[in-house]
Length: 368
Length: 262
Image 1 (cartoon, rainbow over the protein chains, first blue to last red):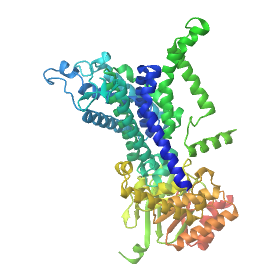
Image 2: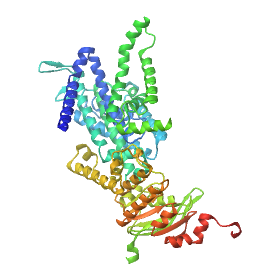
Image 3: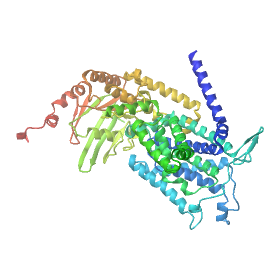
């Protein structure tokens, strides 16, 4: 009786969440304007990124400070295959903008990013902690600097100017950046992107949940907890770590391709160290290794700067009569304060997994 | 193959291992017979754990080889050695702290399972069956070592003696032919040690070969079929416990020799 009740309740919960997610862009669009729907679209990209990094950092315990490089790889591959840039730079080789279908370009970007993940992982297999962080940081910078300088002798990436005129994703012949009229309702481009990104985000969440609760998920956590014991238990730590790097990078590559198509423009500026740290903060702040926590962290950190931009200027004007602190600096200030507070009071993150929370709280009690 | 060789599960011959200026192991040879409990004793720093680490692949050997169950062991490749059938516990307990007791044992099944990324994501019938079997087997093993009631407790929350038992259950999950226990009774009280002894005797009765590093002389002498003694990285004695404990080299290694003897 109670079991069927519980099942009914969880079904009802899922249905409610589904309805909420379905009407979210309309509610937000009506209440705050479509620029906020755009911000939510970006938040979905950040959720994908954070979940990808969570496999590497949260599950396998490998501190990766260059994760944004995989986002860059996905974004640039999409940009090159979906813009006229290559045709303009190498008219002899490429006749026109190729206009590859999205179901081909996105998996290609994901695959290339995954390959880069394995390439990065290979030399770092014996490194841990700080050393691993430094190598991955270097890798992230290498990719960014490559993108910045690969405009000579052959203009592949167009250097710091970036690549323009990237075609939006086409689904069923309709470009997602153009409004679509459906049953008398006009869906703007940001709404279409929202549903497309939401579908892919749900897919990423599904894959993460399934992986966590599997032989591989257990092996990752075992490596995080004690690598020597994991090896003695028969885990091929080399392969399992490379798999974590590869899969994490794959999600980054998908998010990167979506980013390029959504923006219509990519440049190396979007893939700096600060972005890597931002995604890492989402994972750590939300709750390392806990999927709902990581999603929460990504949503919070993606929305925070926009909320500040939206609220800080009018608030300062009403309080002081002028804008004292530019919202951008305020963002970094508040961000730093929030991180310090969270690390001091909730070191395990805002929404940690049940077992991990108990572990860290006992450590804290032992120390006190 | 003669009868003697068929009876031997493991033959380590001429194992040497050096760390910088320290000769941790010097030409150590040891044979283990199927189904016996063999003790490995020696003063602190004698090289017992180094020998364990070579046998289980955590260290590669500078010289020597190990034949296990008729084939040479891939020294330095721990996961393959675990797959071939040598499992171990650690001197300082090394559990997966954030996981439950049950999950710790399930990790031990890793090398015996096959599901990969696709199987996990699609949760195929084969994967579901494998997961169910793994969980059932893990419960069986926890029951075997006597801590199934703690299956869903976090590993770090178990008592010291139960953590030792959990480590043994995790090692058994790899389906070993040889179980290597590194000071399992260290830090245990008399009751816990008696329980451990009963458990090792049960393992022997079930046909497992056990290699045991231990400082508790009473436990070693009472439990082991044979004992080998290491001192300064060399094997100085080997045989049945009664003979080994009277061996003058063993006595001098443990108690030292008087100055005027030297």
